[in-house]
Image (cartoon, rainbow, N blue to C red; front, side):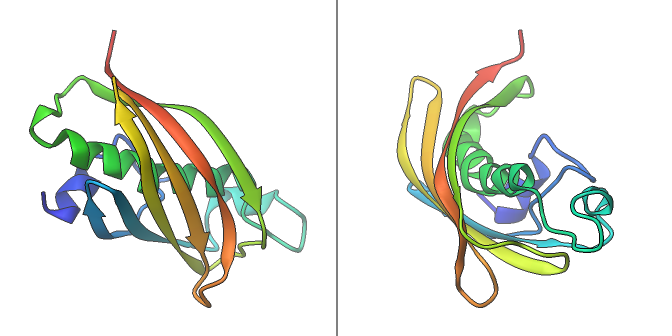
Length: 145
């Protein structure tokens, strides 16, 4: 499956799309990037005069790249129009701040995918190669009710 096709199938759009580029996806994991542009709305109120990317946004970025893109790849031909990915849990460690205009790379490693549940270990690194956060994300792949 072409990487740009995976991004096109994501159920997100601006301003809630946190995937710029997919670098690699296979049956074991995914790697992609996102740059947190300084004009993103959440920076306006997250720490006056010292904007920092909120942890919930870092978590969402890791889930979109590391779990949802991987889920779309794993489903391949079984992906239907009414398929949805429901984010079910996360356990994150935040190690360094991510500032406006920083580009991050997310890498995931599939822990398991069975009965519609996908669980992945995820790591986010800054451009210097330093881990900024890591953890576990999980979700359910199902159809709309």
